[in-house]
Image (cartoon, rainbow, N blue to C red):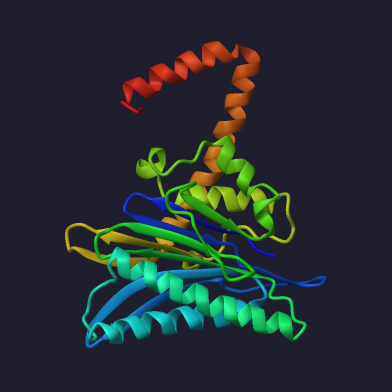
Length: 271
C-alpha cells in the first residue's frame, strides 16, 4: 500500500512518500514520486512533482501523461524557459483531467477498474503553489487552499489524517516549521501501526518544489542526506517529548502545563 503526503509549505509544496509496495502477501520497495522537469541547454526547468497511489502501471502512465502535457505547453509558448502562469497552469490541469477521464473511461469499458489516485504539485511563474489530486475517475480536486494538503494511500485512514488533525496542521501556521521533520514524523508514526506503510528510509522520496524569491525561479530538489539524518533524529526526540508531556500533565494538570507552554512560546515569540 502507500502513504503519500503533499503539504503546502511557505512558497512551495513538499511531497513525501513511504517506499513500500505490496502485491498480496509480498512486500517490496519502490519510489512513488516523479519530478517533472525539462533540460534546456545547460538549464533545468523545474515544473512539477507527481506522485500516485494504487495501480503501479497506471501511476507511471499518469506521470508520463502529465510530463507530455507539460512538454506540449512548453512547445506552445515557443520553448521559452519559464514556468506556466496561473492561467496556463489551470489549462494544463484541465488538459490532464480530460486525458485521464478519457483513459479511465476506456479502461472501464474494457472491464478494468482504474484503481489509482494521482497527485500534482506545481508552482506558477507568479510564485503561487498549486496542489491537485486526480481521483480514479480522472477528476481534478484543488487542494492548495483548502485544506492546504493532500494525503494518498491506505495510510491516510490508518493514522495520517488523524495526526494532521491532532497536530493542527495549517499552511499558515506551518510556514516556519521544519518541512523535513513533519512529514517524516507522520509517515514513521503510521508505519508503526500499519504494516503496509514503511518508515521513511529514502531521502529521494521527499521532494520540495518552491518559488525562490532571490532568483525569481521555481526550484525543486530531494531531501539532502544530512537533512534526512537530522529529521530521523528529530522524530525520535519529538516522540519522547510528546510522551514526556503526557506524563507531565498526569503529574500536574492540563491548566498548569498549558500555562507553562504559553509562557515558553511567548518567550520565543511564537504566535
